[in-house]
Amino acid sequence: MNSQVRQSKKQEVSSWQEFEEATKEILEAHEFKTAFRVVFKDEKGRAEIDVVAERYGFILAIDAKRYTHTWYRASALRKEAKKHAERCKRYEKIVGKKVVPVIVSLIDDSIVEHEGCIVVPFHAFNDFLLNLEAYIDELIG
Image 1 (cartoon, rainbow, N blue to C red):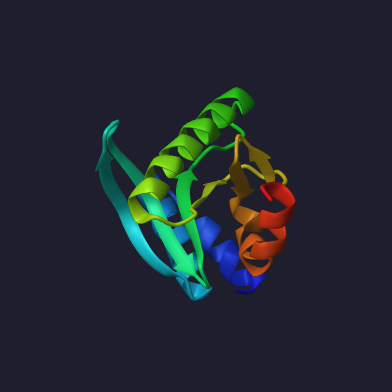
Image 2: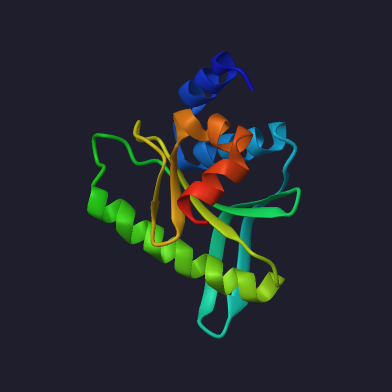
């Protein structure tokens, strides 16, 4: 996916629903099979994952967050990363496969890891998907 397409996608995103849709479309452009708004139940109750994407044995559980510099707080993002990682561990038990928790946000920052969850800025999502194995090895082993 070229940078012009990424930029137009970013400009199209005006609501959280559109942000989730754009994230799903980018995954599909990278030949991931996707499931949208996956709801599951376990002994802890009901949970939802915005997008579950699978390709070449990798399962990514995407939580799309429209955090921007106007209302971004590092502590809020860390809290959400921890919650998403816990939700993905629950989902792993149901599907019986390793699930990689990923938060995609609109914050222009670097790709980081917190509590086992990879946080990817939307502008870097294409690079993340192109170099998925390297990022996973580097950030969560």
